[in-house]
Image 1 (cartoon, one colour):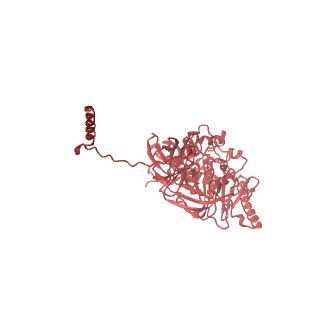
Image 2 (tube, rainbow, N blue to C red):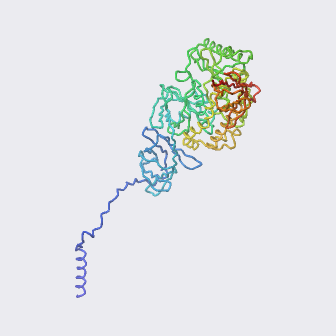
Image 3 (cartoon, rainbow, N blue to C red):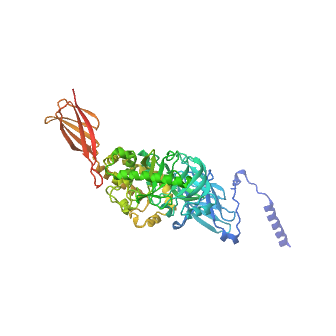
Length: 624
């Protein structure tokens, strides 16, 4: 009995002790813990996990331009090729069949952010891991790399999407085209929008490559990236020019040589239907209109071209050509034939005058503009153009005279295909690749003429400073496009491009960087060789003597009047080049005013070219 009472009392005490609240001071209260809001988990049915894959992923910027990711098989990674217009916050759009999160990790596998579809994101890293993480503890992982450009961009949306683009690419004749819209964003993030009337393929040899060139015709004339308004624009691939620079380099030279109607151009990053296409050169087209080749109603635009065309005519069974202006489709059959006969007759007349050694300068210059042909000569000669005078050789007849130009299609230049153009001497007038292709050119006959040969020499001396800046111009352009070029060669393998060229490709040209360096070296080599052919001097020095006693020496330039000492009876004229002086002339001074003519003979290795003379004039006047 006593034991039972004790047990009851003990149990009562325990219950009472636990029921009495403990008195705690304020200082002893535990700190309140702020609860972070947790992201709601999206539950995934385990049965559909195998279908949970990223079917697509796109980025969108403030201009509503979109970029789809690109899978690079050899790296087992996806690339997002970003132009300058994708600078800050971008919106991520992805499709995986069901609603879920995409977790974004950096290269160190640290979580940056979990995002849902259509949510903004800052892409500041160069490499990410995207993970589809689910409640069933399974993860699909995607390696994503970021490549960035600093160039303007063009986004083209073609009606019909991928199917339309496929039809354009499959059309060898470049007749199939589609409507669409283009957004062009410059480096300052300003956007121009234009409605496309038709986008189609273009080109001959370049069309056979993986990377395709295009022609765009807008519904209305449009100003793009500061270039003059026009409806028609071209997108050149520069493929397979490893440097992606040759067209731009020579088009810029044509401008600086003041060649009329020179092509306008800007390098861009091209996207079609959200997919990155690569680095392109956006250019004006060689066509007759006010802002392009501005010809009159009775003028003619002609192209000498070796490719097959329905509209091609033949001159003396040597040159195929076609008439681009006037548009013969607008003529009746009879009028079309008349135009063709008139143009053919004009070209034959020029051909006869050039080939006839008895043709006077006055007779020739009534029908041909020697200056434009001399400038065109140097464009082809310096560049070692494989197509020079054979393909894409534009001519125009303006007010009855034939002009050479505008310069076009300059990617197959400067040893790009090494086996054909490793020329060490004169190129355009020697038995080089051009001659081996059995296509005679007017320059072989023109260069025999004293008047044309003199014009060629004067053009070289006049524009020598411009020629010498070509390596610097190339370096500046390469610096401008390098980030875009790096993206381009992630999209289009440099190695594949080399393989398709086969034995023509230079064995030491293995990358964008080596291609640029080789081009730079070739430019310097070619220019230095031409400079060696000309008796060019940086300055002249006159040494004065009284009989055999030396009086003084003075540095002078040509075409100036120089005061001599009143005692001077003899002078010696020296030419200064690269810090070294060479005695050129010695002459007694008897008259108070003595004109001097210095005749220097140009060297040449060409069996066609005459030994032209470079003439300097000086006037020497004794002091009173």
